[in-house]
Length: 79
Image (cartoon, rainbow, N blue to C red; front, side, top):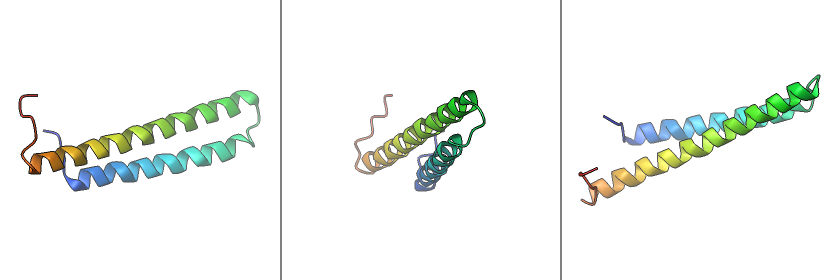
C-alpha cells in the first residue's frame, strides 16, 4: 500500500531539496570541466536532478491533496 503519511511527503520534499543542491553543485563544477564532453555530461546530469526534484515535489503535493480529500470524504475509492 502507498504510504500517504505526512512523513512520506516530507521525505520527498527533503529529497527534492537534496536534488536541487546536487544540481546546482554540478552546474558550478561544470564550468571547470576539463573537456566540453565532460561539461555537457555534468550539465545534463544537473538537468536530470532538477527534473527529478520537480517530480518529487509534485508527488508530495499530490499525496497531501489525497490525504486532505480523504479526510473530507472526497476520496474516490473506485480507482
